[in-house]
Amino acid sequence: MKNMVEVKNFRMDFNDKTVIRDLSFEVKKGEIFGLLGANGSGKTTTMRALLGFYHPTSGELLVDGKKYTPEDSKVTIGYLPEERGLYRKETVIDTMVYFGNLKGLNDPLSWSLKYLERVGLSDKINEKIEKLSSGQQQKIQLGITIMNDPKLLILDEPTKGFDPMNRRLLMEIIEELHKKGTSIIMITHYMDEVERLCDRALLLKDGVVRAYGTIAEIKKEFGGKSLDQIFVDVYGDSNE
Amino acid sequence: MNKNVLKVAKFEIIRQLKKPAFWAATLLIPLFIGLVYFISFISASSVDTDVHFDENTKIAITDEAGILTPGMPYVIDGDREHGKEMVKNGEVDLYFYIPADFAENKKAEFYHISEGLEIFNTDGNILKVILTQNSAARVNELDVLALTGNYEVVDNKLAKDGADSNALGKAIIPFFIGIVFFMFIALCGNRFLLTVVEEKENRISEMILTSISAKHLIVGKIIAMLALGLVQIAALVIPILLLVFAKSGDSFIAPILSTIEVDPVSITLNIILFAASAVLYAGVCTFVGSLVSTARDASSFIGPAIIFMVFPLYFMQMFMVEPNLIVQVFTYFPLSAPVALMLRNGFGTISTPEFCIGIAVVAVSAVIVIRLATKTFQKNAINFNIVKPKFLKRSGFKKK
Image 1: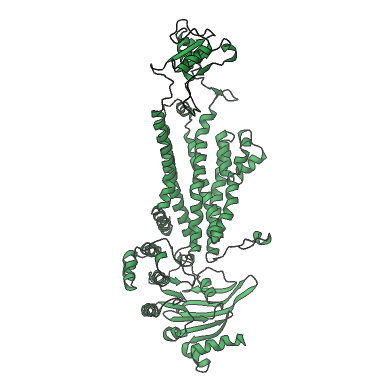
Image 2: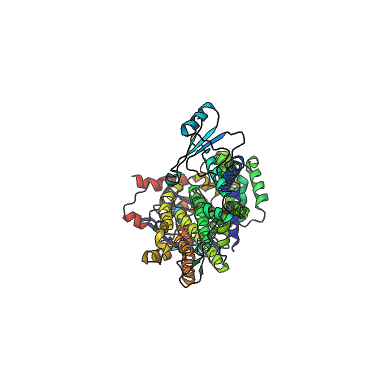
């Protein structure tokens, strides 16, 4: 199996509204894949359907050739959702160790301590989550997302709310995981991140694919324009 | 049992045990009971309830009824006015007047100098002591017993078939378990709700459900909350039981304890009913929690569920006699079944096979509700707004 993710003829209706229409794409093993589109274009819906939160109206969404369920899947997944939260009344270390246990880590405490030191939060170990800044909370969430050394990492707007320093840290972590062979799906509005990190990308608009392929292929298809410009061109149509 | 279920349960138990609010709620009632007991103990030891008077108390009695033995030290020859004068002059502290028609009107009077606002002056009881002692000296022990009524009449009831009937003794354990169930509802209901709602309120459900299934998460939480509920119930019940057994020689408690009928089968069935009812209640709360997205929304849904559960109490009289259709409906309707079964079992108006069927209804309903809660949580895990069930949509239910 070359593909980590396969989406085949995916359609998603909510009541009378069609959010995704006949979407098909693959994410190859070991690649960084950019899922692009404006707000409401269906990116998050696609990821939620892939992870089993939504039942597709039609079509198939497979992870390593199978429909994903946390108990049956052999593929470890790390998911940083768009809607983020933690147990606000719990301490940093208790929260991380709990998730580490759930993700099957042998020694979640050591892993967590090492990670917190790396991201500069070793002095916040026994702090309650609610006492942390939103940027610090995001670092905890990122740690939880990657702690099981995932084979598939899904990051939904991972740099939202990050300052430049933390963005750089996140990019480093993504690159490290990529080197280890992790397949990464990145949902983002920052085209510079896509150009810098992604092997391939897909541009969604109103649940329909507008561009799909390697970054070079997409640029070529749009006359060599930058991804930023392509994004504006695609979404500019709807404003005319 | 699945490892993840245990991991969730462990985490939930530890985090609750760390909260001061949990211990405050757990220990508050036992502490209150202890405090009340302590105060009553202190009061009992500091206030002598026996009526007595010291030798320095100067007493005079006018006995126009002739009830007292002639020559008694307190009896004077003077009339009431003379006695009042003696009080006024300070010759006596207390003056009692027993009128000639005492046997007819059953009223005597006493006079003393008022020392301000005296609402509960018990000095009048001194006359009762004097009269009792005086009469007892003249009659034998049996007469005293017969007159004072200071003896017990043991109640020996017979069932319709002529066998010994110990309705009270049989009812004590079922009703005690019923009371414990109500304590459980009162102490744990909110926690069952919040433990599920917080996953959505904290926007954490999406992250956690990529690591474990909704079923394992919900079951783990229910196990944790049940375990914590048992800790709280134990903290409440054990001191009460210790107190009861410490006072087992008490004239009020001893006869009750002696009537308790310990039937292992009945006790086992009652414990199973309690367990099934607790799980059903947990299931209902988690189902409501999984349906809504905030604790505020949950409170408007859980109220009707609790009303259904305690509804049989409003018809308690019906449960004391041969069951009619309404009682049968309450007995087998899942939400009302726990309380209905406890009442009928307590009043002895249910047969063992019927009781077992009722327990089975509760247990099966508990499993169904938990499965429903799991599926609803999975479906609504990322619904961070209140979910509108179809029947509410049709009836015009508006989103808050």
